[in-house]
Amino acid sequence: MNTVNFRSKLLFLFLSGCVTGACHYGPVVSSFPAAHSARGAEADIVTNTNRHFTAELIEVRDSSLVVLASAKLELLSYTSIQSLNVNVMKQSFGTGNGRIPSQEDRDKLRLISRFPQGLSPELLAKLLDTYGQSELAAAKP
Image 1 (cartoon, rainbow, N blue to C red):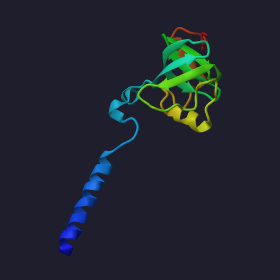
Image 2: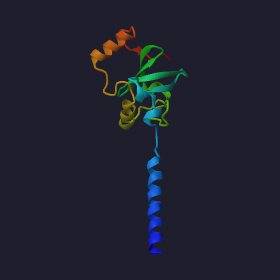
Image 3: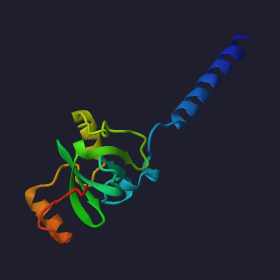
């Protein structure tokens, strides 16, 4: 009788471990587009002036984002963002309603941007040249 109970408990623990190991939370590499290319994550952005657009996250700065929208590099201040939803992720990153995200949230955003290490002046100049710009465009209202 003790052997049966022991085997039943052992089987239950094994099956519980299998089920727990098969569960995950958040995006996985196979369903996260930014993991399959050199591009940053795409985000749906609404500004305080009701401009709604989709943009690629290029660089995360302390007071703003550099985004690529409609083949133009733009500098978008956090205070001008009403909402920012990163596609395939269910996380707010502390942005929206004109709030500047915490350092921790900016670090998380950085990880999914095209240039998580930031843009050096030389790299920014090359990128601007690629898009036919001499400087970052101020985000349109």
